[in-house]
Length: 130
Image (cartoon, rainbow, N blue to C red; front, top):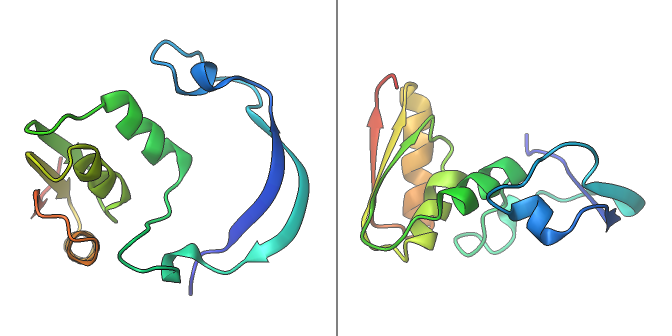
Protein backbone atom coordinates (compact mmCIF):
# COMPACT_ATOMS: atom_id res chain seq x y z
CA UNK A 1 0.00 0.00 0.00
CA UNK A 2 1.35 3.41 -0.97
CA UNK A 3 2.02 6.12 1.58
CA UNK A 4 -0.49 8.95 1.91
CA UNK A 5 0.69 12.45 1.03
CA UNK A 6 -1.00 15.58 2.39
CA UNK A 7 -0.78 18.77 0.33
CA UNK A 8 -1.73 22.24 1.40
CA UNK A 9 -0.99 25.93 1.50
CA UNK A 10 1.01 27.19 4.44
CA UNK A 11 2.47 30.31 5.99
CA UNK A 12 6.16 30.26 6.87
CA UNK A 13 6.80 31.56 10.39
CA UNK A 14 10.57 31.60 9.97
CA UNK A 15 12.79 32.71 7.13
CA UNK A 16 14.81 30.58 4.73
CA UNK A 17 18.06 31.30 6.58
CA UNK A 18 16.50 30.28 9.89
CA UNK A 19 15.20 27.05 8.39
CA UNK A 20 18.21 26.04 6.28
CA UNK A 21 21.15 27.96 7.81
CA UNK A 22 24.05 26.02 9.31
CA UNK A 23 23.69 27.76 12.68
CA UNK A 24 19.91 27.69 12.69
CA UNK A 25 18.10 26.88 15.92
CA UNK A 26 15.25 24.59 14.90
CA UNK A 27 12.36 24.76 17.31
CA UNK A 28 8.76 25.82 17.30
CA UNK A 29 6.41 26.00 14.32
CA UNK A 30 8.07 26.58 10.95
CA UNK A 31 5.02 26.24 8.70
CA UNK A 32 1.39 26.84 9.69
CA UNK A 33 -1.07 25.02 7.42
CA UNK A 34 -3.73 27.50 6.29
CA UNK A 35 -5.71 25.51 3.79
CA UNK A 36 -5.65 21.96 2.53
CA UNK A 37 -7.37 21.98 -0.88
CA UNK A 38 -6.37 18.35 -1.37
CA UNK A 39 -7.05 16.37 1.77
CA UNK A 40 -5.38 13.30 0.36
CA UNK A 41 -3.25 13.33 -2.78
CA UNK A 42 -2.06 10.38 -4.84
CA UNK A 43 1.40 9.01 -3.99
CA UNK A 44 4.08 11.11 -5.67
CA UNK A 45 6.37 8.11 -6.19
CA UNK A 46 4.38 7.08 -9.28
CA UNK A 47 4.62 10.51 -10.92
CA UNK A 48 7.50 10.78 -13.40
CA UNK A 49 9.26 7.62 -12.14
CA UNK A 50 13.02 7.92 -12.45
CA UNK A 51 12.82 11.70 -12.68
CA UNK A 52 11.60 12.72 -9.22
CA UNK A 53 11.88 11.13 -5.82
CA UNK A 54 9.77 12.62 -3.04
CA UNK A 55 11.56 12.90 0.32
CA UNK A 56 10.79 13.99 3.81
CA UNK A 57 12.26 17.23 5.13
CA UNK A 58 14.84 15.68 7.52
CA UNK A 59 16.48 13.79 4.63
CA UNK A 60 16.69 16.95 2.54
CA UNK A 61 18.04 19.02 5.45
CA UNK A 62 20.67 16.38 6.24
CA UNK A 63 22.02 16.56 2.70
CA UNK A 64 21.83 20.35 2.69
CA UNK A 65 23.86 20.60 5.92
CA UNK A 66 26.34 17.94 4.75
CA UNK A 67 26.89 19.90 1.51
CA UNK A 68 28.58 17.04 -0.40
CA UNK A 69 30.84 18.10 -3.26
CA UNK A 70 31.75 16.31 -6.51
CA UNK A 71 34.68 13.93 -6.06
CA UNK A 72 34.15 13.39 -2.32
CA UNK A 73 33.73 10.10 -0.45
CA UNK A 74 30.57 10.05 1.68
CA UNK A 75 29.43 7.37 4.15
CA UNK A 76 25.64 7.09 4.55
CA UNK A 77 24.53 4.87 7.44
CA UNK A 78 20.93 3.60 7.75
CA UNK A 79 20.68 4.43 4.06
CA UNK A 80 17.52 2.62 2.97
CA UNK A 81 15.27 3.28 1.08
CA UNK A 82 17.70 5.58 -0.73
CA UNK A 83 16.20 9.06 -0.79
CA UNK A 84 19.00 10.67 1.20
CA UNK A 85 21.62 8.54 -0.57
CA UNK A 86 20.48 9.52 -4.06
CA UNK A 87 20.08 13.16 -3.01
CA UNK A 88 23.71 13.14 -1.84
CA UNK A 89 24.77 11.62 -5.18
CA UNK A 90 22.78 14.26 -7.07
CA UNK A 91 24.41 17.07 -5.07
CA UNK A 92 27.77 15.47 -5.97
CA UNK A 93 26.72 15.52 -9.65
CA UNK A 94 27.17 11.73 -9.76
CA UNK A 95 30.92 12.25 -9.29
CA UNK A 96 32.65 10.65 -6.31
CA UNK A 97 31.63 7.71 -4.12
CA UNK A 98 28.71 7.28 -1.72
CA UNK A 99 29.05 4.22 0.51
CA UNK A 100 25.52 3.32 1.63
CA UNK A 101 25.05 0.93 4.55
CA UNK A 102 21.94 -0.67 6.01
CA UNK A 103 21.73 -3.73 8.25
CA UNK A 104 18.65 -5.29 6.61
CA UNK A 105 19.20 -7.21 3.34
CA UNK A 106 15.67 -6.50 2.09
CA UNK A 107 16.21 -2.79 2.67
CA UNK A 108 19.55 -2.89 0.87
CA UNK A 109 17.81 -4.51 -2.12
CA UNK A 110 15.25 -1.68 -2.03
CA UNK A 111 18.09 0.86 -1.84
CA UNK A 112 19.84 -0.71 -4.85
CA UNK A 113 16.57 -0.64 -6.82
CA UNK A 114 16.10 3.07 -6.05
CA UNK A 115 19.68 3.83 -7.09
CA UNK A 116 19.24 1.90 -10.34
CA UNK A 117 15.83 3.48 -11.11
CA UNK A 118 17.26 6.99 -10.67
CA UNK A 119 20.38 6.30 -12.74
CA UNK A 120 22.84 6.95 -9.91
CA UNK A 121 26.24 5.41 -10.62
CA UNK A 122 28.39 6.39 -7.62
CA UNK A 123 26.60 4.48 -4.83
CA UNK A 124 28.11 1.31 -3.37
CA UNK A 125 25.50 -0.36 -1.14
CA UNK A 126 26.40 -2.86 1.60
CA UNK A 127 24.39 -4.92 4.06
CA UNK A 128 26.03 -4.55 7.47
CA UNK A 129 25.41 -3.12 10.90
CA UNK A 130 26.61 0.44 11.29
